Picture 1 (cartoon, rainbow, N blue to C red):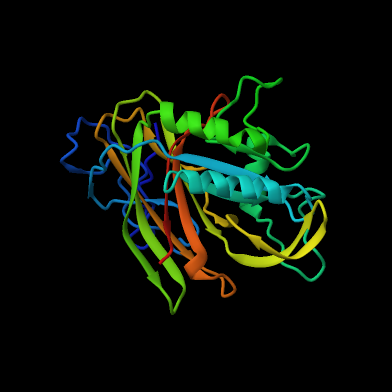
Picture 2: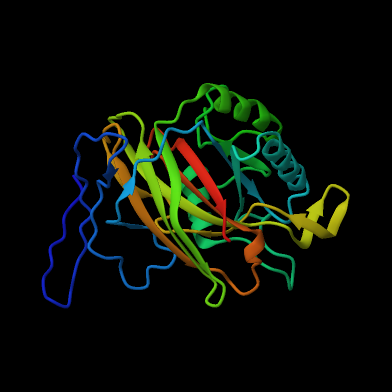
Length: 301
């Protein structure tokens, strides 16, 4: 049971993070999460929202690829190329997040941008510990039993096989959409509500995560033929919202139950808003499974 924090004074309001479970029909405007107001300075912090939206219609399964990479990994450009190929073969169905790792492969070239992020580092540590080698990645954070020991990490050459299988044979319990998306060019602030609906009941606990990624920019990258000073980066994680391992939205959701999460972030001056995307996904979070249920993405503008 999620705790409920009560107001102590007129000036000090704590927020309600309770989940109210009740039967719903898909045509109703519903929201099982109640929060009195977002906390002050809520940028980069996912927060429960009291806004009510109509339930999201069932969706085909979309797939998330998390590409663990680094600028000193000479084979990592091949993994990026593979991810691009998979995206192009499945328009709108595959989202990729390139997470630069804190390893000997991840530190920046002198005088160049450091693409590692604190939350990205925390996430990699949580999901896989320290990568033994790069490139590597996961498909929907799903444990693959064919490896010893079984793990979510799989070589990039196998990504098309797993993505194809998941797209064809998995049916998501949840559907996601973005509501009230706004980008203010003056303040470079992006805000939206991430709406999740469960199309079938489940006894599980679910979380929402969101990442801001950017592509289409040039910097140095180690390759198998030396340093490419004009390498075009794609899918680079710029920000992973807090909590880095996801915000709890639903415990044993009923069919038709809908949850809203508020998202706000500010883009750095050096990032091209036209080349940035927001990737949101619903997932599990436990010692036995962190599997992604559904993923949804949109451009910033």
